[in-house]
Image (spheres, each protein chain N blue to C red):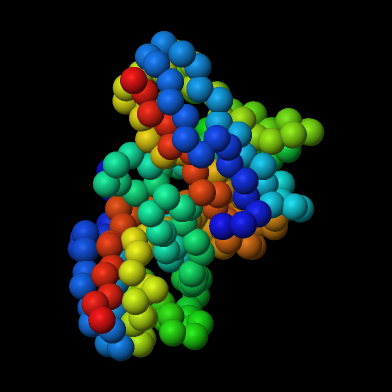
Length: 115
Length: 113
């Protein structure tokens, strides 16, 4: 029962171009979504989040888009840099009190930025 | 991931032994979560605790696993009589307020011989 799905295990993008990572969910009770970045042998690092009352949230080079009707969200990174090479996890929670809710994670997408 | 401290970073146990994983939250954080990551998979929620209380343990296996977050000291995830299938990375995350994102430690890699 995979409630959060990242269907692309890997993605390769040229430096300077846009990276687009996708995530789909099935649980209509989810109303808060987060993206985490993870390097090998480290824990996930919070990147950006979005509430279901919004359809877009931007923070520097990172933008998250939410399409509630399609139960789909995406993370855009532009321009992509070599340091962005990592595994990216999409996560969701029920309720905006995401500091007091368990997170449901996707399987992750390994992003590689080529020079 | 400075702030949330997990130890040990690596733990090797033989089948049947006990494993104790520790998590010290960031200063001021009272919400603690434990997640498990199997190879090539995402993180799976195990348990959510606040000081001295288990709030949600819906992700914990029914047997051999327990967690605590005492008034003083770190949160402990305890696995009794470990089996090969317990080999995984175990991550702790903490938050200070309910409207803040969870911050993760660097995990404990548990290997069962």
